[in-house]
Amino acid sequence: MMRPHNVGGRQVRRPIRLWALVIVSLALAGCGEQRGASPATDRAPVDIPPGIAIESRMIDRGGRLPAPGDPAPDFAFTFAGGETRRLSDLRGTKVVLNFWATWCAPCEEEMPDLQRIDARDDVVVLGVNRLELADVIIPFARERNLTFTLIANPEGDIAERYGAKNLPTSYFINSDGTINHRQIGIMSFEMMQDQVERLR
Image 1 (cartoon, rainbow, N blue to C red):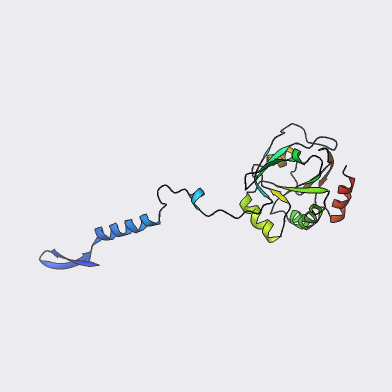
Image 2 (image 1 turned 90 degrees about the vertical axis):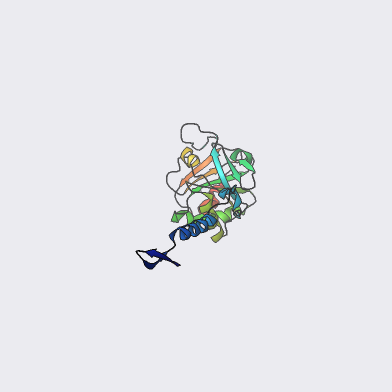
């Protein structure tokens, strides 16, 4: 928009800069965050599958790497609904503890077989993710129809305590909470079945 302006006896048209600045400022203010609004709490909640634990932490920090015959170091994991469980809550049940990451191709390859093992009535599979957030795990689980418990551990303290530097790494835990076997690297379904059958 131009407005006539008298300069040296001539009428010149120049933009009304002040009004333009005011209008732009008001428009930009409308794009900002509302007062009192919190980006974390006001956005729509993410639909998190029930089997994904969004937080976890090591309880038994201990010292040396756990070996067969040792009690499995305890850790806690919390689901989106707020329920917190511990590995030790599963005493009386055989457990396959698998350390994995979404970027690990061998981990992804053995996921369907872990799903099949978890479908058994006598064993529970816990998949502890190494160093990734739940936001990364959720779409990965959905795309592959995974329903066994997947645990986000972005701090990596659980994998560190169990010495899971190479992925995948799996621990087979007896129903009394002691470690029966440690497996580094990918397993076939038959290998998994064999190790589960050896659990007490």
